[in-house]
Image (cartoon, rainbow, N blue to C red; front, side, top):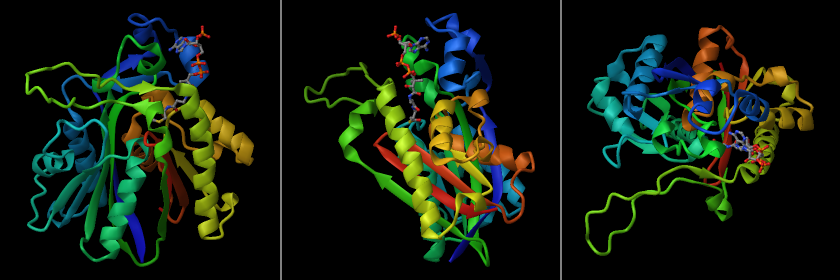
Length: 322
Ligand code: ACO
């Protein structure tokens, strides 16, 4: 069955923080960050939690799709930084946006930076099975909640934000996915949750800060992107020249340059906005898509591949026709 994306939206967090701003509180500098990552600035949330950003992006996508909000019957939010353990961010979005169709189902997905393409695949499966008609698929993060601002190796890389799309069945537009995970390297990218409490005492100590072995992640990322591109292209016997845009998870410009060079793909085929947002994990792909839509870069019938990779380790991609 065919699937199309009919609406796009994004939300920026309130506070723009430049590399220079960060260098006032942690031992780093603009030249190092730009040279190693391509990042110039990022947005951090001041008062908006993940569900607020997600709702803002959702409302923009609904408006773009020009559909009656009551017809949305599936809300999926990919996130690793939910407002709380429960309810899900998706349920909070349902409440905040007034999406209270009797038949609506909402839940969150945690597949780290691959989360958004996993959510797209889940939504497609639900649409194809006939369980739902209009799926609101969101990637939303407030990663600043889990950044250790004393750790220069991680705090300079990430940002907050949200992006959203509306998916529905289509008469002609193809969509397909390739998703993988591998549990042997869980330790290279982590953020711990609540501790067990065998003594039944009140204890607020926490080790939730994001920790990353940067070089191990870099080595994994370049292999993952190539694996996704090769498998998605092979699935439909497509050549990379037939693809109009590759929208990668926006982690690091050097990762993309490495892959482009290795696979002999022109860098201009990759849509990059990480200089403005930093790495927003699950939100980076839908933010990029929404920005492309606003700029008129997603023309009718264009072939697009999105590629995610991240903690788990997880990696995967989605092909769609705009
Ligand atoms: N400012 C200045 N110096 C720094 C900083 C900083 N912010 N961070 C590290 N350094 C120093 C290190 O201490 C080290 O100094 P030393 O040589 O005196 O020991 C030097 O810079 C080099 O450090 P490396 O870790 O070797 O730097 P590298 O070139 O590997 O770049 C980076 C680090 C940018 C993290 C890189 O490894 C990378 O991009 N990895 C992939 C990360 C990624 O993509 N993560 C996200 C994917 S999954 C997800 O999105 C959740």
